[in-house]
Amino acid sequence: MKPIETKQEYSDYVDKKSPDSPILKNCFNAFWVGGLICTIGQLILEFCKYKGFDSQASSTIVSITLIGISAFLTSLNIFNKIGKFAGAGSLVPITGFANSIVSPAIEYKSEGYVMGVGGKMFTVAGPVLVFGISASVIVGIIASFII
Amino acid sequence: MEFFQNIDWMLVLRCFIVGGFICVIGQILIDKTKLTPAKILVVFVTTGVILGGLGLYKYLIDFAGSGATVPLTGFGANLAKGAIEEVQKSGLLGAFVGGVKSASGGIAAAIFFGYIASLIAKPKIKKQ
Image (cartoon, rainbow over all chains, first blue to last red; front, side):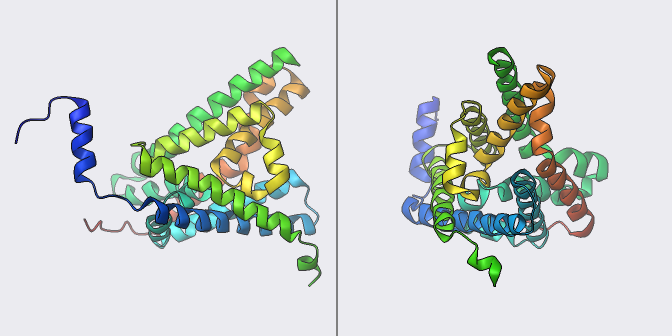
């Protein structure tokens, strides 16, 4: 076999070797699982409003509840199975963000609580927070000029 | 049940469809590009901040409720919304305070539950 020299060749090689992912089936699963998670969120939201919370508090409660459920399912190793089945359907909702924190926290326990749990917790969530918060600060600065 | 009678089921349906559709965008990014899940989440949160900053995302929230707020784009839009609202209240300081303030519940919950889970759960042995 001739050695792979360029990035393009490597990319072609990977494409040839990696199995064709059945994109329609993946999208269908992502659609209904993602939609279902959002629907559960909506029902919790309606329940909070019914109980008299304002909309900001209600949506915070929805986030916390979904994150709690996701953390619970992650620690039982159920969430990873849902994730394998649903792909982006469980990754894109806030459950995926929670899973990305909880999963390494459990996985790196053996490296100790400070650097293992505390440090590795943010391998995926860290970038999300860095870019999300930085972008929001930029938005705020721009807004302070406009307002 | 009075609670179920008060639910706007059309809104729930729109929530399901919009939420599902946002996830499909993520799935297409997974299947058609070589972006890692971490990068996809960054793309979604940043897109949410931009759309929220432009004031466009709130129309999607009005239309689809949790279908727009539960995906990570909603988390981003919430950051932007918090920053803008706080700027209106306390000026430039609000740009630094507002975003995290509005997302604080979710961030703290994820960290806290993550820590608790690490105390309770045993790491699984990877079968590969």
